[in-house]
Image (cartoon, rainbow, N blue to C red; front, side):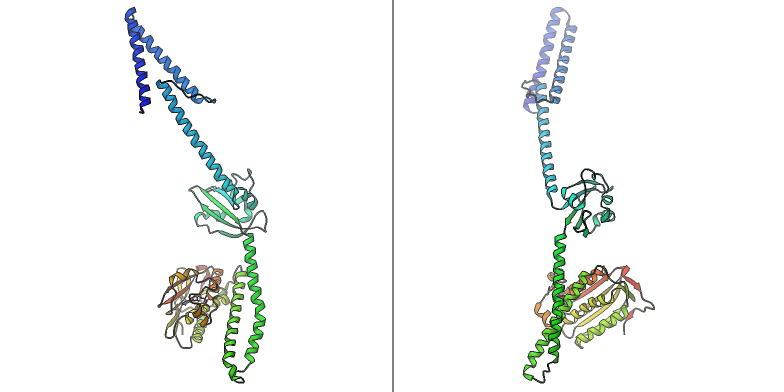
Length: 441
Ligand code: ADP
């Protein structure tokens, strides 16, 4: 007990003793000890009840009361309770101010922010941008099921996937089909989720402009390149032996430019594609073609092996998959010194399948792996150019695999070689009729 409270308590006990002593003396004087003591005790109890009532009234009063100034235990109690009350009020005021500040921040965000109750998927709160971007109205939509309210977005399923929900990219806004949104689900507590929708219309438009620009430039370059290439082919180096080295270099460079333009056009076409064919891709003939291509490129400098350990076919686009696999094979040949080996395999991978190209070549330092599938990203520019690379091969591979919902895995060790494997889900795999897995002839 603090000294001040202890002093008040002692003082009250002293007062009680004094009253009782006075009552005793008075009783003795009158010869009525017990009635006098009883009367005094009753008086003390009544006085304490009256003080208790006063403390209660002052604490619950709506008007501001001056702080009690007396020294008794009731005054001390009232002071303590008032101090606690004031501290609590101050804390509440601070919390309310903080809450208001956070809400003001969330309300001012340019992104739509919606708090959704996890189990019922009902809207609990949303900011102003949610009205503009998602069409939610206050207060009508508070407590409404989010999926039902945004039916055009078909997000009930997405919301149900909770923590595993992948961001919803390029979704049309319910307020206007011209507005494109990216939606993210953030489970921030056990029972509440945050749905954040960002307006990406401008970004998508710029991205479209970029794609169109690359596609148009590539397309425009194609014709003049064909003309240059054609005339260069007509020039016979034997007629002008002094020009022979220049002609050879010009032919090489014009071939490189043609390849670059072709690769850029392939990438533009892949980017513009939303889905992909669902034809049966005969993996028997695909592997044979890859072997022929590898041998033609290698010209006997490498040991090429092909093994089909799965005996299945893939479902997708033969043309695009061939382009992806042959890019991997071409890389394996180009980045493996003479005398090395290249192994192309088809394996089962759980319910799915994997096509892998392994080489015993230069390998790729681990630091480059995260960016290796970016356009024009090269580990060594000179090595890529010398071997006729455009820097677009792996970007094409990644796009083709994305369109097939497949993934590319790369394992590599500098000086020992690399494995590029393409993993396809079970729904992209079908048994091959009369399949007989094993080494291909
Ligand atoms: P490029 O036309 O330059 O080969 P790619 O997109 O096909 O472009 O490959 C990007 C880079 O990745 C290459 O420049 C090369 O540095 C590296 N790379 C690709 N495949 C291999 C491989 N099998 N072995 C070693 N490095 C590779």
